[in-house]
Image 1 (cartoon, helix red, strand yellow):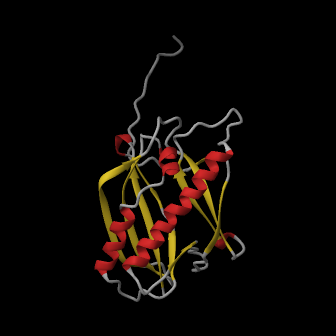
Image 2 (cartoon, helix red, strand yellow):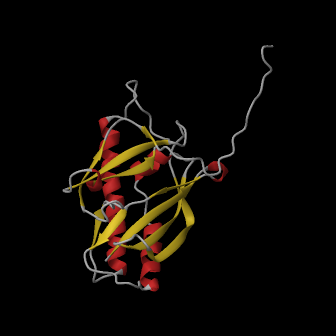
Image 3 (cartoon, rainbow, N blue to C red):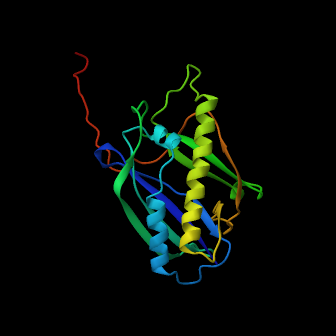
Length: 215
């Protein structure tokens, strides 16, 4: 038994990196060993998917999608079974002027039929672009477009996996390392309030200015 962890890889000015990490559960089984050629094919296809417009708008032109990593992991203990990494020849650059810090994100909530925390997941997508209103919220039109385009993007990943492993189906899932379960997603929700992806800065260099005190 195994599951697939996809990482969409990106970067920003100064070398800061970020990733978005959906999980897919195979309907059939990949086995204890994975055909590397098929895994590389899937990774290359996912890496080079067209990033939908609404998601590019959220990134702003300060961020880029640079590639993908696909991991196959053991369902029982999360041990790594296989891995493939692909770098896009031409990174996908976001659209529009950055309006917010790098930590701002839209949060797509993943819902399954499994109750409790083990049946819920999140996808954080960078949200530096697209204007918010005076109520500090995205408009309903922006939210609807982002939700639709995220579904398109995730379905593109499913299709890439299915094409590379034609006898095995794949479902978007939530992975619980506590219960070692991978329930399938049947709803994606998105609110209109921005969140913060709370994480350590990777390599973004900060410049400081100094004044004397008290004078």
